[in-house]
Structures are given as structure tokens and as C-alpha cells.
Image: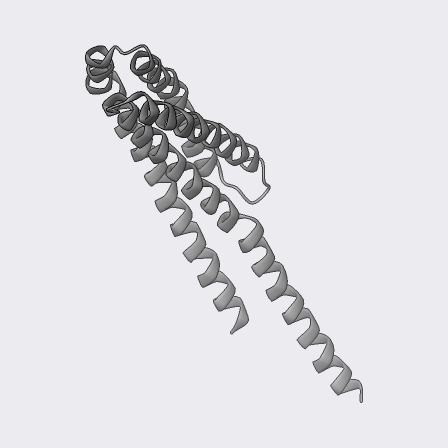
Amino acid sequence: IGFLMLVAWMGYRSTDAMHADMSSFVKGVNARSTLAEELQAAVFKRAVHARNLVNAANESDKQQEFTLVVAANKQVVAKLAALTTRMQDADETARGRALVAEIAKVEAQYEPVALAVVDLAMKGQRDQAIQKINVECRPLLVALVSKAEEYAAYATERSQMMVTEAEASFH
């Protein structure tokens, strides 16, 4: 009976450890990775709607695109704030924190330029908006997407490492 109790206890501890590993993965790196993907999607939506606003053929389309670009910008702000907050998680690394800080730095440069494009388009200054897109906005958007992709690759790498470690500890 003592042996059976020992085996049962060992089984319980193993299951408990697997649960902790899975919980850490789901609530940690996976949650942050999902936030980063949602941030990137919002960034793309904002860029597309800003471009569509500049190219809108009539006032109705212009108003619709304006509403959509404002909503997308709010999503960017909210997702970046949530991701930045999650960088304080105990299981996040210095590299992850640095990558998200770089995303935030580029976004701080990009957002005012993107919103200036929107403002120019709403004022009917299409040529100036296109110039701002080409000269200022596009390079910053490329940098922002690049930083977001770099974090996504890092998060995927971390996820795979955690899965590998969990599998190794199970066997």
C-alpha cells in the first residue's frame, strides 16, 4: 500500500507540474504572442484605411474610412498598451521586453505621421497626403512591421522552446 501511495503521489506531482507548464505557456508567452499578432493586424488595418481615406472617391466613402481608421488606431493603442503591460510578466525575458520597447518606440514615431495623413485627407489635401505617405509614413510602417515580425518570430521561438522543455520533462 505504501508503494501504491508513492506511485500515486508521483503521478499527482507529475500531472501538477504539467498543468503548471501548460498554464504558464497559455497565460504567458502564448498570450503575449496573440496580443502581438492582434497589434500587427490593427496596424495593418489602420494603414489600409488611411490609404483608402486618401483615395476615397466621395464624401460618404471618406467618412466611412475615417471612422474605420480612427477605430483601428484605438485598437493599436489598446493592444500596444496591453502588450507593454504584459512585458512585466515574470516569465518574460529581457530580449522580449527590448523588442516590445522597440515596437513602442517606432509606433510613437509612426502614429503622429499616420494621423497627419488622415488629417490632410479629411481636409481634401490629397497630394500632400500622398507625399506624406511616400516620404514619411511608408518607411516608418515598414520599420514598425519589421519590429512586430521580429517579436513574433521571437515569441514563436520561445513557445517552441517551452513545448520542447515540457515534453522533455514529461518523458
